[in-house]
Length: 263
Image 1 (cartoon, rainbow, N blue to C red):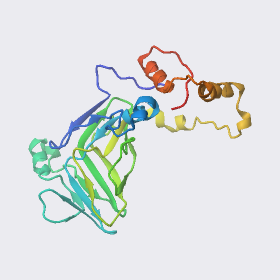
Image 2: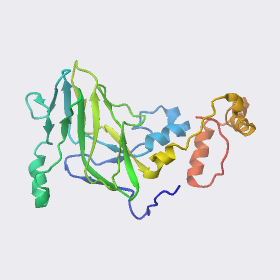
Image 3: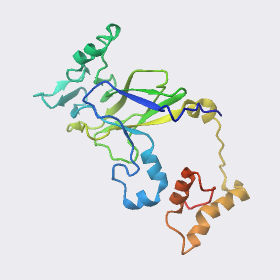
Image 4: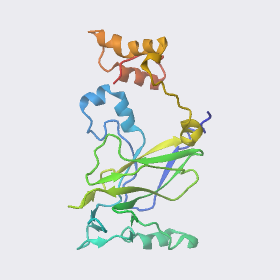
């Protein structure tokens, strides 16, 4: 399978900030913002790789949502009461958008928050637009290994951002009605990850095999299992975190494939 290459001289993704108050996206952190246990950060390469895969998106403003079971309301600093949510512009953004947009685009500023028809569902715009290299898309998903605020769950979506140049948003479902759900502009609320389009096409995902009977594992399978799990755990002097060390060396390109215990 061929994956569209991109030149290191050109970015894989470019983020365009339209809401000037929004915090810029940041590379996701291997320690999940310092929240991972020290042992996981040192020895579990699987966790740290997942944590660092992609970029953090931040809410462009501190705001709160509340759902009464039927309607959604929102509030932010400077308003005295809860506002019913239909489709809400970022404060003062529509005027700023029309000041900088060419005539054909004026009056078409993206909404910041939109109450969806489904109960408790809200669409949130990050204040960003993104463009990826040809044949690359962006997966927008919940934060990897970084605790999110309570009271909502985030949907995942794949956007073909090499073809679609529009607001980078995500959908969430409010999960409680007893109190407000807060979002902070200095804390990420979503993670975006680059995906080659070929990786999620049907031809790729249909190429799956299942061995349903452990008696059908081959001799080579059992040898790999022993090398990965059995022999290292019988060695009283084994190095802790061998998997993480080997994976880091492979990323640097100076380590041949070597069996190692699971993280």
